[in-house]
Amino acid sequence: MTQDLTSTDPARAVHTPGSRTGWWRDAVIYQVYVRSFADCDGDGIGDLRGARERLPYLRDLGVDAVWLTPFYASPQTDGGYDVADHRSVDPLFGCLQDADDLVRAAHALGLRVIVDIVPNHTSDQHPWFQDPELARQRYIFRPGKGADGELPPNDWESVFGGPAWTRTGRGDWYLHLFAPQQPDLDWENPDVHTEFEAILRFWLDLGVDGFRIDVAHGMIKAAGLPDIGHKEQAKLIGSQVLPFFDQDGVHEIHRTWRRLLDSYPGERIGVAEAWAPSPERLALYVRPDELHQAFNFQFLTAGWSAAALRAIVDASLAATASVGATTSWVLSNHDVVRHTTRLGGLRRARAATLMMLALPGSAYLYQGEELGLPEVTDLPDEVRQDPAFFRGDGQDGHRDGCRVPLPWCSESAAYGFGPGGSWLPQPRAWKDLSVRAQTGDPASTLELYRAALALRRAHTSLGDGSLAWTEAPDGVLAFTRTGRSGHTDLLCTLNTLDRAVELPRPGRVLLSSTTLAAEGDTALLPGDSCTWWGL
Image (tube, rainbow, N blue to C red; front, side, top):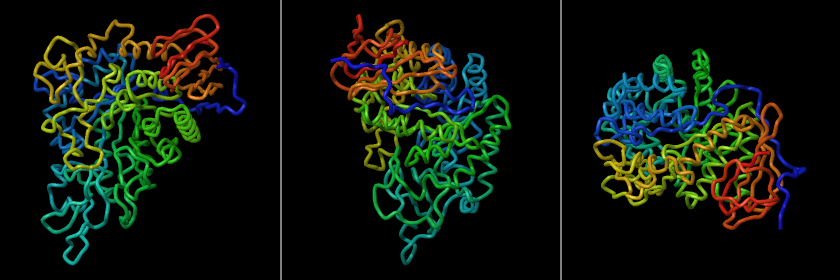
């Protein structure tokens, strides 16, 4: 039985973007996890020079910008997210000149550069925290409960597991929503505001195009630091309502930073890593006077079902449209299981990617997903470095599995990652997934990404255009894309079922995530597949 794909459901939702403009609204941004991308000096750890030398690969892949994870001076307790000095480069990754060279090289290739900023906490090796008096002014310290202050000030738990408080030799306690080596800053102190505005200016003056703001929802805590009253409070990517996340006070900080960004030429942007309990709360971070983008974790955590995906797409687009913003989409990053594994295999991962790249707004790609890399689930305990692994947080602390260094070729040591091995062991099977092995193979995941990004640029309806759902059988999603000119030129179909579905052929095949049978007037959509059709 066939069903019309292009007839319009009278109750369909039509999503049209707002009137604001900006390069980020439909950009494809590639996340470089610096320590695992490319190693130039042979110490087994990726560095800025290695990343700079691989920038032509990213240009040729077809992305618009690069997001670099922290490369600042750090004890590396949490992969660099424990920053000791925001204005210097850790010797592991090079020097400040290497950062400057990378920004200039990226701009010469037509790529923009976004860097991480970590405002919720610092390293315990930061000069402020090392000074006992400054520490108690600029971080969150409280006396303990109990007869002798031997109990934590409240019942808050760390995202990485265990209590969120550590007692000092003085008998008081300091807050750390993450590892104990990452004390939370007190944003009630104006010195903290002044310092971070100076940090932003430092990197903007160097030429970066924006900031990805780590834990952008966490700087302000509820007054009185109230107890929560239950365990298992916070997950790394979660939507709980908590007194230490998503407090209204964070928005004034972001408004201040937006004014600073707008004072620089060249459309510099702020991107919120914000875990909000709903799309509506997330949209508050991208109001016209706040940040430019916020990661859409609701989409990342969606199940593999047509109904779930459509509901999240509808809610996300409606929420951001209400404030004149566009939505960002992401399937993988350095904190979650790679979506090839999380969704149940490469077929679904390829299909999910094609759907994501056909949605209105911008897309974030995590390094290695264009190679179809799976999560590495069998790393020996002795090589793990994720602090959540050592604190036993109930999430197994397996973030190391998505951070294994990339395979660039099949022939050399560390598969071309660098001349001195790799800081985490790479699976033997990855030699067949390397950049060199997949280049030129039309069936490879790398060539699928290259083709999709090329088509995305060629079709003006993709990116910052409108979306309209069309009628489709249960288990299948179908939507058209219309550009600002009013021309509809693309239909996307996603079959989330494990079996093929026959449909009337809606147009010519532009790209499919798997081999597609489309002859005459019918098309057979394979299970777990996505196809772009030209109309």
